[in-house]
Amino acid sequence: MEAFIDFGTKLTGWNLERKNTHYLRIQEKYGDDLAAAVFALMLKGGVRFRGQTEWYREHNRKRFCVDLVNYQGVPLEAADFSGSIISYEGLGSLVNLKALKHLDLSRCPNVDDWCLSRLHVFGETLEELSLAGCPRVTERGLGCLHHLESLRRLDVSDLPSVPCKGLVRILLEEMLPQCEVVGIRYDEDELTLPIEPDVHQGQTELLREAARVQKTREIPA
Image (cartoon, rainbow, N blue to C red; front, side, top):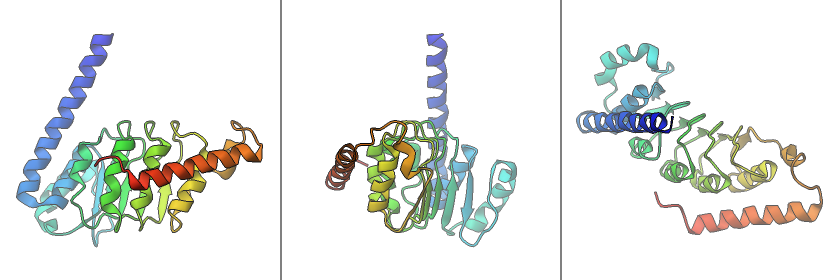
């Protein structure tokens, strides 16, 4: 059984490496935005360019290949990687995008705190971000999001590795006052934390201190 699991892990890694190589070829020929779009579609995700209302997804991928040259030089504004195997290395396909506004990383099993450290490059453009259902994201990674000054909506629902969820929401709203934080209730800690005020205050101070440290010592991108 262990050998079978190990083989499956290696196969997944090989597939992702192969897709990364294909991305580099497209990038050299067509530029960053089209290469990122092709990479997203290879992972069965979706993309939308500036001025476009319809998403390109797996079901209309062939039409995208036909339309490819029409989008050369057009900024990619939205990318949906939900449920995909995108990882820290795969996010490298996005870091050169200059107009990305919407990014969906929900239910991605390989997205972790290190991945979130790469998102600082979208500080001036990203408006919507979903991390819902990412099992490896913790409060430390969420601290990296303070760079996203243009963020208007953040979905952090169903994050099993994040403790003290109500307090984390308070921290996020302090870091990103312009942003609507969804997926966490203020009272979500009542079933797991003592209700003494001094305990809650201590936890809040710890989270605030973590955010201050994060601002001065970022996880390397």
